[in-house]
Image (cartoon, rainbow, N blue to C red; front, side, top):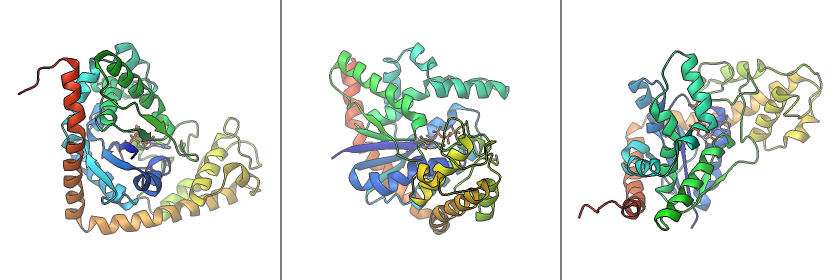
Amino acid sequence: MTRVFSGIKPTGHLTLGNYLGAMRQWAAVDQHRAEALFCIVDLHALTVDHDPARVRRLSRQAATLLLAAGLDPRLCTVFVQSHVDEHARLSYLLECVATDGEMRRMIQYKEKAAREQRRGGSVRLSLLTYPVLMAADILAYGADEVPVGDDQAQHVELTRDLAVRFNQRYGHTFVVPRATHPTVAARVMNLQDPTAKMGKSDDTGPGIVSLLDEPETVRKKVVRAVTDSGRDVVYDRESRPGVANLLEILAACSGGNPETLGGVYESYGALKRDTAEAVVEVLRPVQERHKELCADPGYVEGVLRDGAERARAMSRPTVDAAYRAIGLLPAG
Ligand code: AQP
């Protein structure tokens, strides 16, 4: 059976981008067709300036939202990365296979390092090595597929390179995985700056729709979305990024196609109103289920405990094999 691994970082409140680009597909498709693991990658949240209490709170919230979005622990494994030591163990071995140049070429590293510096902070070494830990997350489970938004494509490509290199040098140990992307909404853009990704670290901004935003807040944010100077509604990512983003969100929420929807609207106002309502309707069941789950925190904790146990059992043989293959003496 195909094995699938993907993760979500507790660096902010989960967004519409996380939902349409990743979580929805995990719940509707991946957990049904594959042996699937979904991880709250909390170690990755420590790569930038962080507040410990907030990371803990956001990790719990992310787990609750994953379940609210439809992940079913009877069908898939939901767990927290730091509960399973294999990730950190394997990450070090992969650091011995990766190169400094490869890390510095990562687009997300360049963007996030620049952001930290703009904010007057220093760049943590873990931000540079983040893609290696992500490779360990994936390779430890022998995942065949990694369903992600297309912002993560470069990191999955690096994971493949590291797996191939390790296998060639030390003998076949890892499955070489591939990224899969949703066909619509693979990259939801910021409503205030449609040339930038809707990212959760910027979660207070009016350009970001959070999964727990009240319907009125969602409507306000969508109606105030930046559009383009033209008047007619056409789908063109290059010259009309604002309108294209709204059409993609509408298509992803209503099941249509952005090009076709472009021909349906005569004004930006109508497009925004329909997009806002479509988003509100998509979020409604997730928010209702989230509320129910918050009333039963013991359930979420139990899911994470079982998930970590299963994840440990699944990853340990591969990580142990990697330790042997690279030349480390078994502990006996
Ligand atoms: N805007 C987006 N459109 C489509 N997919 C997206 N994803 C994230 N943002 C969008 C997908 O969501 C999954 C989990 O993402 P992540 O938590 O690993 O972090 P990220 O990609 O770095 O997302 P953020 O929200 O931008 O976090 P910050 O701001 O902390 O960096 C992934 O599959 C991702 O592709």
